[in-house]
Structure formats: structure tokens, C-alpha cells
Length: 111
Length: 113
Image (cartoon, rainbow over all chains, first blue to last red; front, side, top):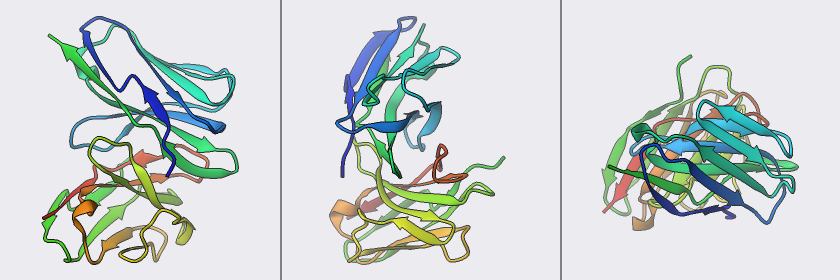
């Protein structure tokens, strides 16, 4: 099955740094979602985007729905230890509500 | 609001044995999904229900996997017989309808030995 390409695959940062990750697809999506998954847990929804160009914030997190509808970006400002985990993007195809997940970005904070 | 409930949390079986997973979605959510997440990968959709009907099972290995949602609420996913490559986390998710965001349970970690 199709999976979205996320980059980077992993990130090692220091506490307080800002983080940027993105997700790209060969297909157009009408909805983009960003999830965070902690070890041993299911993914937790962070932000949902419904319109091309939309910019949405949730606390220190900001996500954007790309103008081409084929990409999305997630930024985390002033990272803290609890931001550690795996971030997944997910998209819904136009005309097919199936959710397709990205390959994930693993965020690690270096002490 | 209670979240998506799944059981068991962990299961270890031998290859060729059978196993079943249970999911109770968020109350009022019409759409239910089963995903398979292999270590190091994103979740992959196995089957999607809308109430008690199947919307998409194109990626379900139907020779060994089956799922049902008889009354449009709880759902079970069964594997019979299991193979080593079925080792993964099986995630259940639900959404209010097909166009709204999905919420996930904690998953069942299956190890086939």
C-alpha cells in the first residue's frame, strides 16, 4: 500500500531548539493530519488541516497544508523533553476517505 | 469521553495458531478502522467499517485475516493461522464519520514465534 514520505527520518536536537519536519506525496489530499506516537501507545492526533494553504497552531505546534495539496509541514517551537516520540503525517485522498500514513519522523532530545 | 478500548494489550502465540483482538470504539463513532503497524513503519490500513458494513478491505490478507462488526459497535479482528510476519501492533481507531479525524486505541502487540 502507498505510504507518504516523511523527512527527516530522525532528528537529534537539544532542548529548546525548534523542529521542522515535512511530508510529501505523489497524490493530492483533501485532509492532512499530524499524529504523535509514544512507545507502546497508539498515535495521538495533534493537528488536523482541511484546506490548501491552511496554517493551524496547537500550542507550540504549527502545521501547514501545502498549496499543491501534495505536502504538509509540522513545526515545533522551543522543544521540551515530552516532545520525544515519533511523528506521523496522514492524508485522506479525494474521493476515498482511507487514511494513508507517512513513514514517521523520530524525534530525540539530547541532554 | 472514553477513548478507544482494545484488548489484549499483548499476545504471544506460536506460528499456525489463531488469535483474536477486540476493539470498542468511542461511543457514537460510526467509522471503525483496523491498522497493522510493523516495527519502524507507519500504520497500514487493514479494514474500514462504516457502522456494520465494510468500506475498504483491499489490504486485508483475506486468506488468514477476518474482521467483523456485527452490531455496528464493537469489532473483532482474527488471524488464523498466524505467520511470523504477522508480528506487529494492531491498532483500532474510530471516527464520527468517514470524513472526520480518527482517534486510536493503545493497540495490541502481537508476537508470533
